[in-house]
Image 1 (tube, one colour):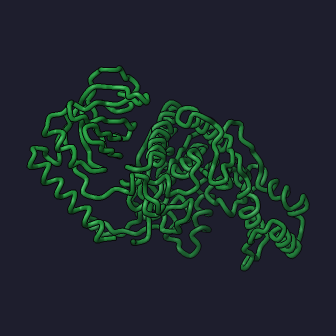
Image 2 (cartoon, one colour):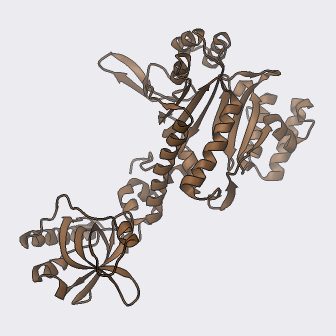
Image 3 (cartoon, rainbow, N blue to C red):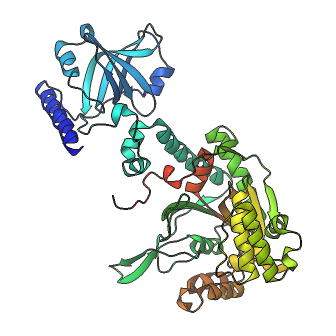
Length: 484
């Protein structure tokens, strides 16, 4: 295979040298042109046009030759005719290869088969491709190769390229939606003295100039709350977080998040944001509110209102209304029976408390089956120590987990603004590692933080849901991979 590749490269290098000898600089300069999508939209028989792009197909037929040109906006047919080109230009055409980038100008023309085309009068070499493209530009067959060689994937796969154009538009609309509602975009440190705002394993680094260790942030939360304390009442940040943990279909160690905080708000304020933002994105970018998700093409309807249901009610719906009144041994037997009934592997080794058992049931048997957008509320306090307790039950916190297609898209909180209670929660979370308690953050809370609502969602996962992809690697341009 390597020998064959070298032969192709040598052939292309020979073409490059021959083109140079004929006066065609193999790597050109700025070329004024019109995008192909605009040429097609404004097509007028006989009108002049000047285009540029990559040759995706070449069909040589003697005196009349056909090429397919792609510029990322559209594909368009070029016709190279001997009687329309100079002798040199027509001879040089024979040295073109698939993947070469050219500029061409000529006259618009419709073939007998009705295909809109450009009859080329002059053409310019803009970039000679030395690597042989995938067979007939059908794209890369190996999915992992698509991730490793994203440039080739985008070059050959219109669907993949469209996905990333949609991602870009979604990010733009998220910003527009929040700005239009009075939120301001801010930036907080990515290199931090200590990881905070979530329980996750960080990446470590070192400041040479300051001679101190630091970590890549796992969340911007604690810095954004400092801004709320400072009087920036509606803030959001859209940027990167880093967690040195597992990689799977919905997790990448480097990922994009959007965190939003609103002073004088609460959990319900955050629910309102999600119920407004998601249909807005569907309407302005996707063009529909019902998305067929994953290989199963499960229809997900993002039309609000979304279901609101408590954690406990979901558990009782599946496990029985008496679940929370049962002793642990009876709960355990019922959970095993439900696992056998649903052919679900519950991980029960080491589960020693009713709280742990209930959450394993929720995680494996309930959340994964919540397909339509759902706010799961009133979560046990032990799982969300940084949130404010429910007014009527301190064992629960006033938060939601927003679940779509069996996966959590984002949590939303009524944030804890009591510095004394926040210290207790952080100390409990840190255990013996008391140095993990962010004293600067506690000090900021002691200055007084107004009642606040907050949420954070993974942008990558949101793009997955709205484009119907079921792997995060399909919506991240350059996902983390093992060494080749």
